[in-house]
Image (cartoon, rainbow, N blue to C red):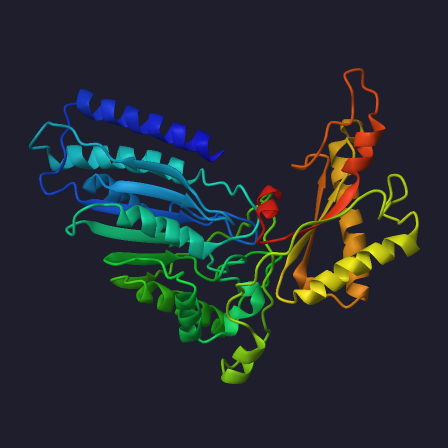
Length: 414
């Protein structure tokens, strides 16, 4: 997905360059080739649809266009990557009129608005810190101290993976405690000389509960402390209005527990809510068809005694790693191409395992049930060229997997 978008973006940029040269246009004599701009785009579930026509976004794209800036758009998911990178091209024609400059800039802005809207998460969960680190890396690659560097973040800021995982209770932490913990693991992004603007911080959508005023305020203070520690010149939170519409059909993002009333941030609360989870991921566990078998086309255990014995082993493992969060992934055999039924069945089976783990004392908030049907990364072909079952392979596909959200296997959960 990202590679296709990058390719398309560069094609659009080439068209723009041809347009400028053919029309006899030139850059503003005051616009110097010394601007870098990175935009982090948090288009993901649990978030509101980003209005790219907002004043802040349009001002940023106009600035990029007039300054012929080096620009990078970065998607914000669990493993953020740039999906568009280029330098806005200039022509060799001089003394361009103000009206002509305006028309050219508007044409750039229109096409950049389309490109920025193509951000699509490739993995579940959100690692906003890593997205900012990617942006800092790109801006840091610009040689010369005279570059104007800007970072625009379009995201709720409610990160759910990586070092700044707000599902761990970080929402109530002291901002300086967060900074100190990030310093210990060398995770502060290098934003020396960068001006940072943040839009839609704290704006969330169902099933994520709305943040209280105090929670939203502390969320901004935490991010501001991290960004300033990284050397940012300025950090500005805008008042743009977010969309009332929620993103649909995106990879799963965990919810963050929030309070209904004002919560004081104090030492006792911080002691109960660990700031940063730096634990190593646990190894993936596969509850296969032989150990945890279900009744055909149902989410009922065929032999509940044997199933509970195997699931109890998982409970022991999770108790040994109390800070780790896991996906509970259900998969099925091919199902004669009935993808919708198999996805629903696999999700119900995953939830059945979660229910048993809850009975065994595992906190529900640590487990994310997901149904992948027969479209999972680990699926083996179980129907031959004549449409007949390959039962040995079909049995391998009927399984429930326990995958740490910070493991390599988690990158295949979407």
